[in-house]
Length: 206
Length: 238
Image (cartoon, helix red, strand yellow):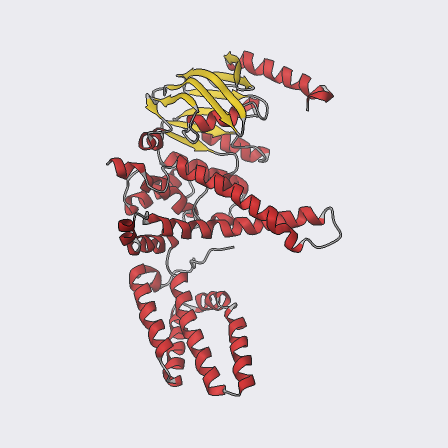
């Protein structure tokens, strides 16, 4: 399930999406370029502090969302462990923790439609190239909406397979899933058209 | 009470994937609530999609209040809303409020006004607490209600329903039917649930893209139910 915005209210929810994303950009750039382990780990500690300031429950939810990061940390640790570059490894892990931590914090405290509106503003110059600026923003929303739907479809197809087979379905579900996705896409295009399409007619006519 | 909307199909021909769905189809609707019955594949859904301006007829015109509903999309999203059979085919956004606000921004409202409009509609349905809910956490019946609210938020004059309650349990259907009964909009409702159409102003029965019966719900629905029961008893008709 993809509900990335946290229902637990924090002061960060009230900040503007643009402010948060700009701060995130500057922070990530600085952390990535820094070679000083104390600065990097200090930044990571600062991010941890920001989570805690949102309350223990919020910090725990944030930690849960960062679970996939463990995988990357393990790979980096393994790699640098083999090479014997412990200090280097710790630096990279600190950078990962700080950058992903803050990015996740921004995601958790920003409404999707605010994020989409921002993407739309940033994409506005694309209009000069003849590309509808709402397109990237709308795509973002559609991905968020339909990833859970496709996962459900995959589960349903898997069950239909298992009901009539002793073997696991595996890759054989890829083609039917793709066809279902295309079918879904056609329905969504209808739904979009029913409400005015990507280029809303109300604004073009005034 | 809103004024009835004038919907007209004028000599409509439609071919899809080599199959002729409608051939010189004419129909005028001026009643407030019109029911549409017919077997699967009779053309009910396609009639609903033509009326919503989602498909273009190969020949002829579909007009609502005089506007060419396929071409004039600005008028279309002001005049008509459609509720699909499967809410997952209709809901575009990941959360309830965004889904409701989208249609309003499409009608030209600013983001703030659209959000306020969405909140207002949610409150009118007693679902103010749904605003931030992810669609993925809602039940099928709840998703249907989101679709209905998203359509009504745009305040169209005609709401088209394409078998919207298929596959729902009886209490959910009863609740949604009650919501629908309270709606002041004109309705064009394609359904297999004959009881839902019993108190409508007019019922049209179509078969193979043609009007078979048209008139008072009492007479049309009784004959339809009788014919369907007979077809069901006949093993060769599947």
